[in-house]
Image (cartoon, rainbow over all chains, first blue to last red; front, side, top):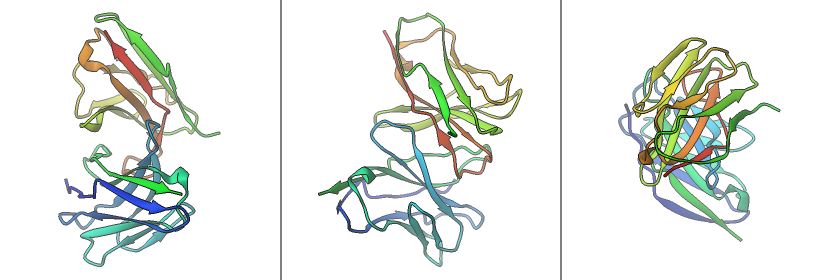
Length: 110
Length: 113
């Protein structure tokens, strides 16, 4: 299974864009990149996923480099409610096992 | 509202007393799974189910049982709980098993004394 590397923590000013990086240099050609977040001790929340192309939805944008070895999750206008741990996951396991790493703790500050 | 409902939210029990944590989803999802979350260890999968009557072990299945008699329900059973099963538990469901759009429940915080 491809593994991911994320910075343990990041700060972002409220209203600014939050850019969360993720390295996945051993990703296979058919593996997707998924992003989830967990606010405090609530259940994780799906944000977005992608394979090769950049993706955007109502929550965020996902930029995947051309060689697919890294990606960036962008929250365009971070709010205090975006303070959470963000997990970058490369699909692992044929059984749909989401393998959560330690993630990045994003703190959005006023 | 589409959701995954877990009960109870909090539970304190004694070693060896059988308990069941219920999980129910109203989205007609085929795929369901259980995770536990521990400090420093992150979220780890316990069991999963591809469909009714189809279940399989995840990464940390020891000490747990599951059943999937109906599509909407996926209970987690601890036949003889031990203190090392003290943890935060999450149930999740999805209409796919590839990884996107999983919906997680609010969690069950279990303490075994």
